[in-house]
Length: 504
Image (tube, rainbow, N blue to C red; front, side, top):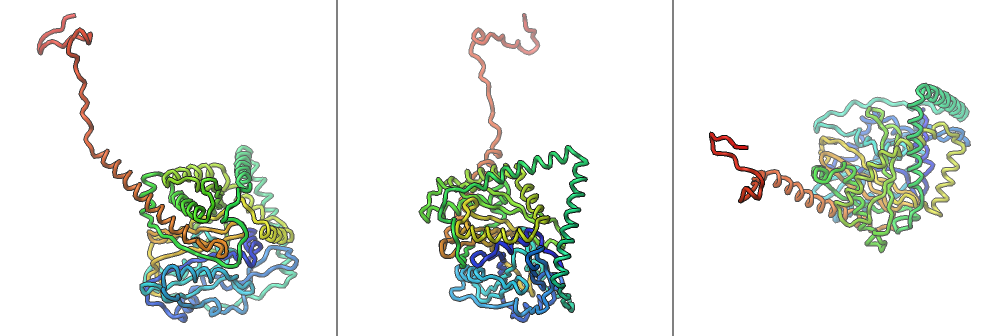
């Protein structure tokens, strides 16, 4: 039994019928497709490394403590591993439509909160494995998920021997409540000790709280409502999905020419996508303010990184009002640099940590009340979410088949009808764009604009670097200083002939 963190529990409280809080990954493989039984054998062997995937959420009576993970005595692997086939014409559009349908359905909370779909019939003899896990289980920006655990680095790697598993007996309600209040008491005492130790160095403590105050001030400033646009408002139960592709070496080329980080280039591309989407929908992008929540993972490395969320974030203004792609990139680079220096990330992490000492019987109901209010009166402070998920750099395999592509999916919530996830894998970058199907069915417009803007930035980066290289390759110009025609004009006497002595 393990208690959910405050943030993990919030992902459960924030979920309703119209706002499922699961994330997903679509892994595309070269053929031939394995059978469903073969996929089940892989999971049977690897679940020994994924204890959370045989556990379900147990809520405490009257919410007298945060929920806990308990072993599911009725766990059935066959329930979680499913299969389907892609209809004609088997292209990206058909795959996107399937992803949208699968992601529109809530996960069953009476069971472990995940499922995997084997999808046959992709173009060029390919197939896919779609993993869908609740955000309460997986840190969506740490880059560690279910598929990352079952993959192998070698095509002929043997499967480990399955280990027998016996579910632990569930504790009683009384035991759970007593343990919850005992854990809260221990956490309060631990925090008190931390504060005492911190103030043993007053200068550092004052600087820490000054930074947190600065970060909270910047965060509060970004939470004021913006002028409404069509990609904000109520959302329904159904999702649309689109994808865009880039190469990491293309992004590095752009960075080399114009500066910034990989994430800055990605945010600039997403800004271009939103500008195109707003223009097509009749909004005026020149007057729009589009604020994106950019999650930042606080996880370190290690085998336990898959368990739970440790996330903060920045709220970044996307420069959709700018038409020039290079100018957009420069503005994004300056914006993210300023936000990192503003201590907003540290403030977000500090606020989240305070949740672990909050009273659950108040937090859960208040959060759900906020969700119901937001459903009828959607927030307008945050227009979208953009998350960058780092993936493996080396090629991965499953049952000897090579994974050729990794596509991400990010959930959306009330008020924000569009979200973008970016995933890196083996030298490639993929953009997965999620939208509300009923209000933003034209989400492919955003994806196509990302690819167009990328092509333009690459063209201009190549031109700039080529011009710089040509300038360096040219010989240094010969500078000649003309001598005056007459001594009287210059006021300088000529040097004497060789061997002579100049007279005064």
